Structure formats: C-alpha cells, structure tokens
Image (cartoon, rainbow, N blue to C red; front, side, top):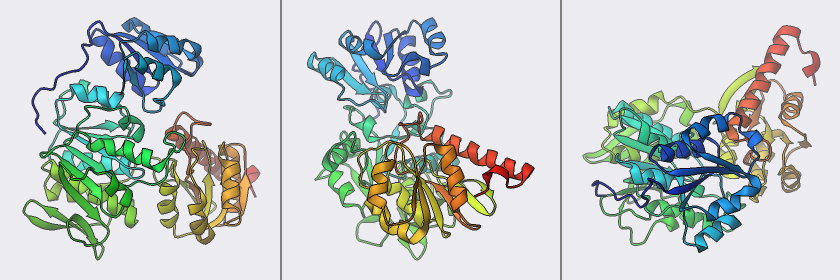
Length: 471
C-alpha cells in the first residue's frame, strides 16, 4: 500500500457532524471533530441520566447533546454521520439520512482517514483481542512505538492524539465497525475465524462473512492478509483471485502455510526461512491459543518484527482481563472470569481448557445464535449450568439434558448458586455465550461485577466462616 498523504473525504471545518453513541468512542470522536472546527451533535438513544458528567464535558467544547426522541431529526440535519461500534447502521433515521445522500461511516473509517502510521487490523469471531494485544507487544518489544486500540477498548481515533505519534497502529475491529467502512485500508489485515454470532445484527451467516471480509476490501499487492486456513468461512471471505499477499496459518502442516503447529511447537515462515516458536505459555494454551499466537506472529513479522521479539512477547504474555482470568478461590472452588466470551464459539475452548468439573454461568442478551453446540462439552465437563438474563429461557430449552440447569435473576444470585453446586476442586466459569447489553454496559462491566462479588464472598468467608454463603 502506498504511504503517501491520503486525501480526507470530509472538509471537517464548519461541517455539521452527528456522532451516534455517547460512550467512550462517541466522546472521543466528538472531541476530535470539535477541535478541528466541526459543528458536532452527540446523540444517544439512551436517556441522558445514563451519562453522568457528559454535559459538563461536552458543552464547553461547543458540542450539542441530544437523546432519545430527538434523534431522527438530528440525522437529517447532518452533513455526515459517524457511528459508534454498537450502533446498528440500519436504524430508520440513518436509512432516511442515506436516502438524502448523507454519508454514514464508522469511527474506524474516520480515524483511518487521518492516520499517518501503517495499520494492522485484526478481526474474527473469537481471539481478536488476544491476537491484537500480542501483536502490539511483539512490535513494542521489537523497538517500535505502537498504539493498540480499536474494539479492544481504546477508540482508534485516540491514535491521532498520541504523543509522540505511533510508528505502527494495531487495531481490533469488529463486524459492526467494518460494515460502515469504505476507504479503510490496513497494511496488514488478519481474519482469525468465523463462527455463528451476532444474528441479531447480521441475519445470515453470509452477511456476517461479507461484513468481516470488508477488512480486505482495499488491499493490494503491497499489503498482507493473514488468514486461518482451517476455517472454510474465512477462506470464503478472501477475494479470489487475491490481490494482496496471503499468509495463512494452520494447526496442521500443509502446503502453502506461513505458520503451523508441529509437535507442540509453532513453525513460522520468515523472509529468511522457517523458525520455531515454542508455545509454553499457559495463557496461550490449547488449539485456540496456538492459532492466536500464529496470527500475531505473522502480523508482527509482516511489519518487520524479528523472531526474537516475537518469542519474547509470546513467552511474557500474561493474558487479559475478562479472558479466562482467575479471580479467586473459595472452599477449594476456583472462579474464572471469561466475560469476553460473548458467543458459543468462545465458550467451547474455555470449557475444554478446564481440566476440572465446571459449573458454568451463562446467559445475557439473546443474539439469536444456536446454543446446541454446547451440549456435548457440557455433558462431559459440567457439573451444572446457571443461567441468567434475556437468553436464559432459550438456552435452557436448547441445553436441556446436557447438565442440570438452574435459572437465577442476577449475577450475585448466580455466583451464590454456582458455589452451592460446586465441589472442592471444581471451577465456576463465567463464560456467558451472550453479550451483556441486557443488564450491563459491556462485557467489562459484567466481568468486573463478577469479580467484585467473588471477592466479597471470599472476604466474608475469611472473616466469618461459611456463614450465609453456605450451600
């Protein structure tokens, strides 16, 4: 990809821009645009009461705020509209704006227009956060000044305000973000896997595949695509013939791979031949961990990172919050926070990674996915399943008979019930298979709540004995 100065499609100065979504991303974009002379209106479908301090933060910058019923009119008054990742692009007001010729784009599209550093973008149903973080750590250990952000928790727009400016930007991107991109053009684009997810947003698997495949839309001969050769849906998302350089990874040695697993060691193809990457880190255990490590190694290597730096990053990787995070032990029962597991495909490796019997806490917002693939591993691994949230009734029906199932109203009751059901040596695993939006702001808030409950229970037990938490 040519690195010359990009033309910016919007003349931001004096432009009327509506930013949809008033959480972290929306606030960051609103500030960025206002400081560049745009007339910004920040809107959200939630009531203003859910955003304490927002008015005090935004109004001094000249940013107007609107909520709930005021939104449709705001869209039609705009010269351009920017969406936060969680905002469906097919809202009636947004469709009406498009019919009037008003551009509707994602935050990552806007940020890309202004980026000067090369971009590594990573997507997939599962593993993208770990792969993004590991890629960033490898590049940093190789001496590069790196910004890591996107869907991983730091809006990509913040890369434009980093001082000193980054030399490389590594971004996790979701299907939500990709479906409203046009010029978004990563130098390195990785697609890790595609399993059923977000059927509330993408009604068919082919539409979901198409949204993810947009990560390759603008790539050409100088760019690199890192792909999972073991996943047929990933292969179907790559343009044919591929205009970019394709570097595939696989759990099996096969022709054309740039990385594969061989006798417990990752073999990586570099510019000067093959090299071995030992995979002895428990944070990257199992087939899923191997795939994440191979993808990160290929992404970092495509940006010039040397094997030694990649090996150091893999060796020192300590995992991430809300991803198989050990949060405490009570009466010999270990509690693990895997709140980031917002779909069935993420729960499967979580279950398999637990050698002990599991009491699974699941449920949340019902995205319409099929929960039946969990039946077989639950029948082998689960002592019980505790369900909460909007999806609980359907999960109970689809998982009936795989393990004893209990329904509860909230997280505190779920943790109490799980401890009551578990035996010493068991694991209580929060791995919900659902997003959190029915009860929480995001998976992080859900995981933090779980962690606080476990900590409070542990301290109560330490201070007062078993007491009211007894089964």
